[in-house]
Image 1 (cartoon, rainbow, N blue to C red):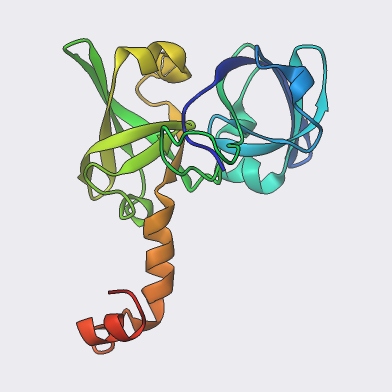
Image 2: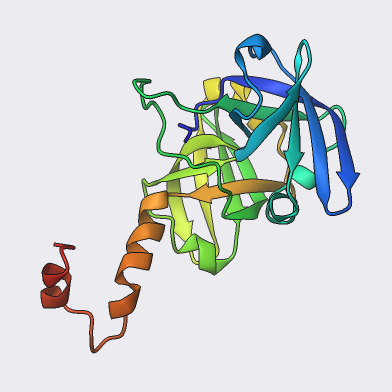
Length: 213
């Protein structure tokens, strides 16, 4: 579990393909000596397991599933990535609940500057856009952000200067793909009410009888 508050920006030094899988090496300023084999680290928002360490580097085995559903497989040596270690019980929840399980990738469709803030718009499929709400939370490349606007196939966010300079979001360009994790709450609610989704079976009475209200 993560918060979406980036601890460090690392640099990819290797992204080696092994069939449909990838072995990723990232140099970092995180205290590598405190990170154990098997620990979880979010890399651009994707929860990865540390399989080896070096003095200033973390090494991850990336499964074919993660390669196919995120941007991890397209990383190249020299690229920067957002890093966050897993949340510890008792830590402050400064962002929002982030699982590190990427829902989809989105594409930067527009960007502009407003009063020193960066406004980014993204396109993504309607199947995933339905989980976004105005003023709700979204994680973009692992960064916890507030949704400013939602459309049928996209959304926009406002990024303050501190977030821009302390993450990789300042390096995005129109057309770039990003990892997107929508708010976990909406997905669970949809799953729980799915047996009663038809117009004939879903009612205020049904919701009350099953503990939703």
